Image (cartoon, rainbow, N blue to C red; front, top):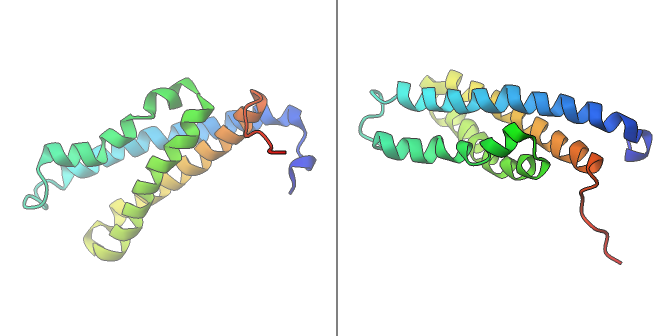
Length: 137
């Protein structure tokens, strides 16, 4: 399907759907990652201190949270760079830690949905607002 077949009047509706998808996956991802890090503390006591684990896994998701809640397309776009970190982590954990596969699968699902939602919202809402890359001559 090409962009020509999409009528501009449809963009606000699509942006709203993508925003909802982002919110219903990004916020649970943040809560889930925090839960995962604190629930497996006893099992991985010899690895990282709790404060360092929080800094590495929870704080990055907090950085774009304000802009995502406010509905800023630019923030949705750059939040995807952060989501890639969690996507790779979940894939690696699925392969290397059989005892944490359920956690990794949940993280993979939430991350993928947040990525799709944030990308779609940035695209459609950006066009509604007239934002975009300028064409070079």
